[in-house]
Amino acid sequence: MAHIEIKDISFTYENSKEEVLKNFYLNIEKGEIVAVLGESGSGKSTFLRVLSGFEIPKTGSIKVDDKNFVDDNCCIPVEKRKVGMVFQDYALFPHLTIEKNIGFGISKQSKKEQKKIINEMLNLVNMNEHRHKYPHELSGGQQQRVALCRALAPSPSLILLDEPFSNLDANLQNKIRKELKEIIKSSGTTAIFVTHDKDDAVSIADKVVVLENGEIAQVGHPGEVQSSPKTTYVAHLFKEF
Image 1 (tube, rainbow, N blue to C red):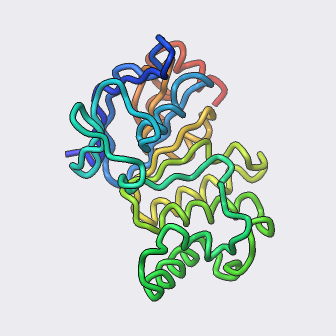
Image 2 (cartoon, rainbow, N blue to C red; image 1 turned 90 degrees about the horizontal axis):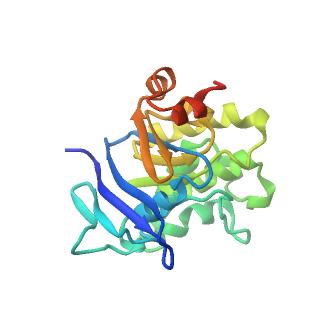
């Protein structure tokens, strides 16, 4: 049984007749890094919102670790899904230090356990010496690592990342891609990220899902999709690589 099972998801925004997601089926194994690749308007950000619980699909079901997130009979709210989210702008709290940002989502745990988890996260990303700094004192790549740590600290069943490299300097992107992949793999957490950049998918993902107008055009290993595109749209996305 797959770690994540997504079946027949369709979604339409209120006051709109056009389906943004159509017949979306996808299985994801535990620990996989999945890239959802598509042009603007393809439905990739809406897919993240549906998966996280910010939007409710019209039809279909989502199951994570054999737990129903949504189906015809139920819809678990955002705060109970144990899904970590890394936003495009990182959304760090400017008035909190790095260690307090990381500890924000585990405040209900004992002080001893909080300290243990924060230390583990800082060691994971080699940022122990920055623990007392504030977000504005860090580079974009460092801020991203802190945002990832904050999302990982509560031990989520799934991490979602929205265009994780779009705010980074082009010269740093290759280095940051490698770092991000290593951190996620070290944590053992399943991750899904959306991107419009094929280089992101090829560099990081175990599996790429190509979206075209809300429908899956192709799913497979990035190298396989790149070398054997099934549609002209998929070929267009990978043509410059």
